[in-house]
Image (cartoon, rainbow, N blue to C red; front, side, top):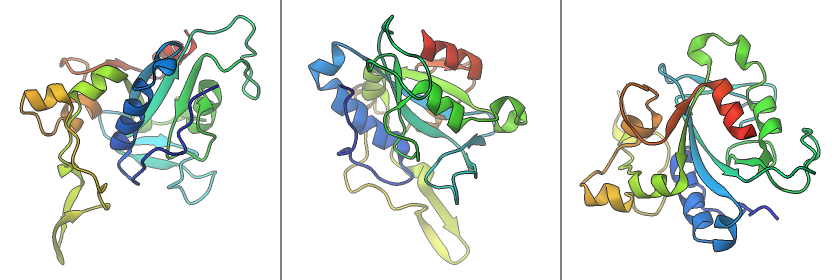
Length: 216
């Protein structure tokens, strides 16, 4: 059976923290670690304008949402030779499964169905709306991620600094290695940033490379 996410802590517009807590929950369960690899996947690009369909924030299912970045969890196991790889029926529950807590699709969703419906016209989009993926092993993410939520603070002509979206009720997250190094915020610089010329966490993949990774 695939692990469920329905009881996960969730705060709208804080996808990186929602996924952090879900990764933490999955890695704490030996029965998941024995069968699956847990990964955090950041979706963004150099212009911070990626286009995703089937998002709850859209006005309808046929409308897209343009995010500056989005974060999902990938649960990756070894494919079974008897597994039907069609979009509608995959048994047994092996392969790569996507946990997107902001999607209208099932959670988890088999990667082929998720990609087909979340990025239906990716190849035809202008470059500025195409997605790049940073894949970070779950343990690496838990150890090194830090956010003081400053990226969510905005100012307006009639309001002083305030959060663009209400923050989670729990304290800001700082992984053990990040905290040991005095790092309080590296979300945008070391995870969302997709410049491959600077060493950061995980591996950066273009669309085709991410599909190949999911199918391995």
